[in-house]
Amino acid sequence: MQPLSRVWRRFDVGCATVGDGTDMDRSVSDAFPGPAPAAILRSGVKNLLRCDAGDVVAGIVSFVLTQRRSLRLAAAVLMRARETLVADAIMLLNGMRCFVGVHYAGGGGEAAITVARLSNEQRAIATLIRFAPDQPWSDFVFDRRPQAVLAALPELARTAWTWRRIARISRIVSRRHDAFRAYRVVELLFYYERYVGLFANRRFRIAVMSSHSNPHGIALNLAARRFGVPVVLITHGMPITPIARLDYDLAIMECEASADVYRRAGCRLGRVIIKSRRDDYRPMFPRRSPAGAWRVGIFLSKDPAQECVVSLLRSLLRNVNVQRILVRPHPVNLWSGLAGCLTAMNDLRIRLSVGKSILDDVRACDFVLAGNSTVHVDAIVAGKPACYVRGLDHAPYDVQSFVRDRLVYELEQPDRFDPLGIEDFYARDQWPSVLRRYANVDQSDADLAPIVRAAISELADIRGR
Image (cartoon, rainbow, N blue to C red):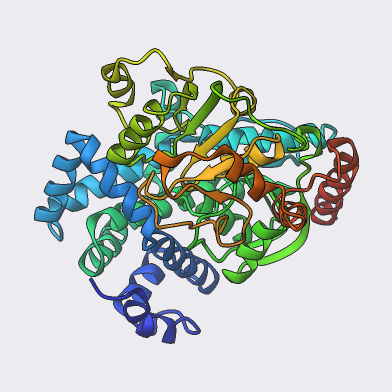
């Protein structure tokens, strides 16, 4: 596989003039004619490929393939049949599935439109809507029920002239990279076409998203740019690099550190507002954990490293001072055998979290253990010492820089669990200033709500003029 910089070197030369440059330039320009659409799509494809080239995504893809036999079979078929009509058909059918799954939910005449496909995106956007309840809100919903699909088929048929050209783009990406990335690029192109059709017949004042790397999120950003609609980003956790270089007129971020990640990635951020964590904030000290009654939580990423999780559990179970171990799976848990694995360990101290909020589970623990996860911030804000465990998921070491920045304690030897050493780490004089870079514990939601409401209204008014 060629390095991304080499793959796109000749492609970038042709970005100034539509139709010049590589075969990818020409294919995008043919499929989506006109200087502005082609330039926007080129940037979107490049951004998606950049995101999918990251180690985190590669680790998740490899893990998912180990968990799903059907996906392994599909991947094998695509690899063997790539650059054939079979692969073209699979790619296009999946793209069509994306297209017919998106629908406008209706609403006020000049509404603010939102897109949230995953549960964490939905929660983030629901928070934003609570801050600005007077704004007319509507959304693009994801609905694949038969009646919804049938309603979208006429619009899908009107895009048929692009399918052959999209298949050509898919072959180019598959040749240069792999079938997975071609699959994602095709999804991006079909989502973009769907959003363009929905934007064309309506006058939305703002577009709100909570994704920085998924095809549906990138596509919304590109479609909004095409129609001059301001884009609002509200994040749902610390970003994992690489992220897409997109423009946002308003960004509501987890923390100052998160905003810096977006800036370093090349994103253009208009106004930045930092979310409040004051309502959840509890001072960590003074405290000392009682001997012989430690309640330890293991909070998993979506792609747990099974052997490491089992090893950590066994180390904790050997410690007679551990009273209870709460295991909380990620909302998008990709380890299908997690519950069976815990049952097989046959120890009543192990409990699997079901149905409670993340803060409820954090507060039920004396110590929180996790890998590359923003639960570390949730824990320390709630006054619970958090410990980073290397190798607990398939991402590289400390991708969020929590250990490097001395925000989170690293548990290097789980079989030597040292509560006093952990608490001494968080008792450092400089630690509160590190915390404030990762969590706004000085402003409440009540303080933040009028600021967000005014920023949303200002953007909507500018668009409405």
